[in-house]
Structure formats: structure tokens, C-alpha cells
Image (cartoon, rainbow, N blue to C red; front, side, top):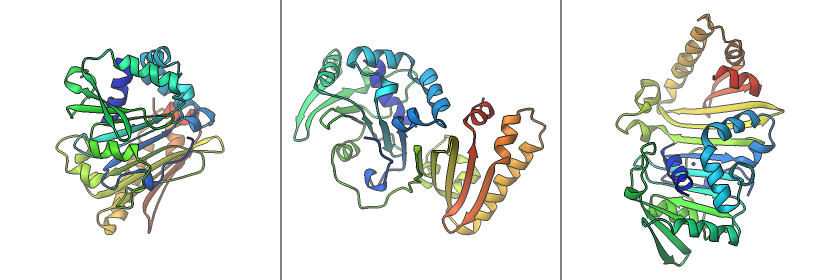
Length: 298
């Protein structure tokens, strides 16, 4: 069960069949990722991406979860949502067929850890893990404790922050400020980022001049009649700079097209890229076959 616990924690450093909406996010979250596994499994566009996730990311975790819980991670779980802030505080919600028998199996597996303690709460049992005893060299854990709950039906909730953890366990809907959420029919990936907050974080990939001009990013990836449909929305801190950002992107695309790169799939991808600037901000749209997308990104 060690690999399963580390999987949940590791997704923090990025974690029923339905798209994410703003009420499912706490108002102070700086980023979120929502993966619809059910849509991925049934979507022609998502199949190559899902196969890559299965091959590259699941591996030993898949076997361990199947052995411990009797659940096949990549074929039975329906969705994964993770959100947090720039200080490593986060919560994740994994939905799937977690019946009483499978809950008991997971509880028995957690009992093998001296680092795990049980707390009785009004919302059910909470398992608290001392991260100093379960840290892994490949996983960046910024907090001293991880919490896990199985109290919600068919749901595993994991958190590194009490406020986010309580929100994930509750049925309330946040009415405060929320990150922008892009939606689309047959969406299987939704991502949002408060770029302002991340740009203030020391180090990391958010220190570029382009991203420092960006207030918020939102991405949705969906199935568009068998093609992969990526729609990215960028909101600038100063609306006047949106045109400049659009021109920078167009320039980078043009340079790549003229570079003589022998990747035909990449040229196809760039030729299908559409960049528009309107009242919603800068919209970058790409509709491409899954095969071309996978080949272009190899």
C-alpha cells in the first residue's frame, strides 16, 4: 500500500461521472487538476493518452491497489480531482467502487504503518500519516502530515491541509472567489492555475516574463468527434498586454514551422493551432487527431 499512498501525495505536487464545476473548489485554491477516467476509457481521442498514463505512471501502483483492494485502478475508478495552493497545502478526491469490503482491505493495509494514527471525528474516521516516516526520494512532500478518509461513499479523500481536507469531505459548495473552469462536451482533463500566485513562488517554471504577465490559466481537453480538442484560456494582468502575448505565441509557432524540423506530426499540429483574443482573454485552440498529437510530443 506504500505505492498507493505515495501516488496520492505525489499528485499534490502537480490530482460519479461528471465535469468539475466552480462549486467543487474552495475559493482560496491556487490550482486544480480534474481527470475524468471514465471519459478517458470510453473516448477514442483519449485512448492513446490513457494508455500512456497506464504504461508510464501506474505500473506497480496498479498491481498493488488491485491486490490490496480488489480494484483495478485504471479500469474501475471514475475520476480524480486535486487542488491546492503554492505552499504545498492540497486535497485530492478519488472516486470509484469503494464498498465496505474494499474499505476494510484499505484500513487493514494502513494498519501496517506505525506512522498512521486513527482519529474519530463527526464526519467519520480520519487516518493521519506522519510524512517524515513515509517520504520517498521521488516525492516532494512539503507538509508534516497527510490525512485520509473513506467516510464518503465510493470516495477516497486525501489532504495535507485541514481546511482543504474538510472542504473535500463536505457537501457544501464554495460561494467565494474561484478559479476559472473551462468546460466542454466529453471533457476528460480540466486544469486551472492562478498564475499570479505561482509567479510569486520562489524558483520553478513560473518565473518567465510571459507567465508573469498572466493572471490566470484554464485548460480543458475533450473528445471532439474522435479528435483531441485542447482549449486554453489565458487572462492577462493588463488586458492591453493580451495582444502582445498572442503575437509572441504566433511568433514562436512561426519559428517552429520554419525550423526545418522533420516531425510531420508537429507541423500538422501547428497548422491546426488557432489563436484568438476576445473579451474572455486569449484563447488558444487545437483540434488534432490523437495519433498526430502523440507523435508530435514524442
